[in-house]
Length: 547
Image 1 (cartoon, rainbow, N blue to C red):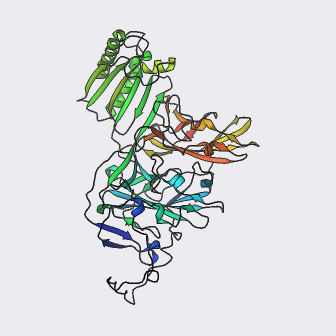
Image 2 (image 1 turned 120 degrees about the vertical axis):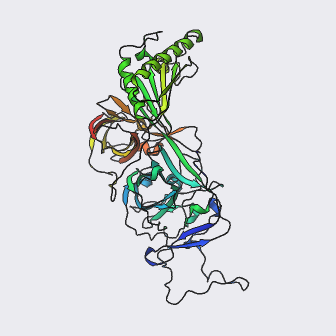
Image 3 (image 1 turned 90 degrees about the horizontal axis):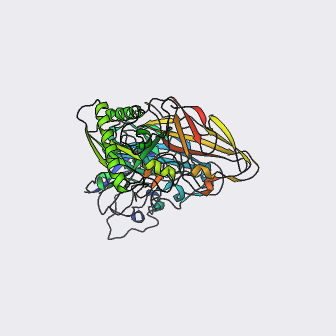
């Protein structure tokens, strides 16, 4: 968990909806506030009526409301009565087959104080099938804690290259809808439910952002309203100013690789790491730069010029085939050669370069294969990532991602069954990021599994795992660069998750004539207007637009 700051707690105020037509009244209260998910204050729908709890003669009673003051609307406290117009809508996609019948409406994205934003989504079953148990897919799957039902709602902050998740109390409870906010965790046909989450605001005062949903494609470039949030029916939104909170966010990594294998690049929330192939830069056992090195290092110098890095770190590495007496001085000389050339190519003033050799002591890949050895022979150039101002976003209601819309398609056979993949235009969200959505259809007569969809990408240096859309990529024909799915380090920080459709055997299995939809957050080239997209073993699709 990466704490960005802690706010002290002084008193509690809860935002409640108590009047007709969704009017909002702010109520102030006091008392013990920091509670776990199981100890949260009861919702309005769960508060016992006066007929259920007889008054005590020792307890002061509130005076009755004036006769001209309307009573609270009973419909508004019904957890299934949210009739707000959706800002944008998408279709849910996750590993549970029943979630494919769930519509997702974004009904609120509002600032709450100076440092937080409230996300509200309404979930509705579109068919009268079995109920869907919300905690299966709505919780934060990058942790093992399923107690907080809506802990998986978040925002993609392109300026920081992070996923902003619901803030947490010292007890570990998130400021979000929890299981005991409802009578039960199931979502039934005709009984929609609205979930909320209080998350840190995107950096730089961004006026729009992208909503992250672990069970559906992201809702891109949504304007953030400055109006006070209207709480979901039957729930209360806590005021973050009244809690000692730990903002929670997950750093993301954007991988790319040149098709000629001369360089691998990983951009995370802090820095850019470019692994330059020693096989391309140098001859065997030599430290003199090759003729092709000039073009490669010029691209690297341009990347340094576009950042505001004050220091550029250059590290030489070798594979494990030789001994330290050879590898250590060779890796050092190669790092020094790259430093000398970059010093002459970088045009920005005030940049300091360092160079160091590490021999074979820091491999990135196993040395038991030829490909692993080749990728370990490298010179790594590291510097601070360029600052991004964030997505500008639209000025009105956002255009949601396509769901079932037209797109380019390709066909292949899987275990003898004909399959089709249909790819939509890539939607950009800023910061070198985009959202790829596609659909796969089993046109055959028997059930078949598409296991290749979730296979870890072999060529990309940092493609996330544990997702159903990890084996996809797009290629910029102009620069001959391949971009892959974005990965994020969860709360434990020990493994890289694919920011894509949640994985698992059920989502890979396709019944006969069944169509499934998938999505992946993916790196996109800055200047390209079209790209080539590859989905698993399907033939690549050319000229996919970037919008």
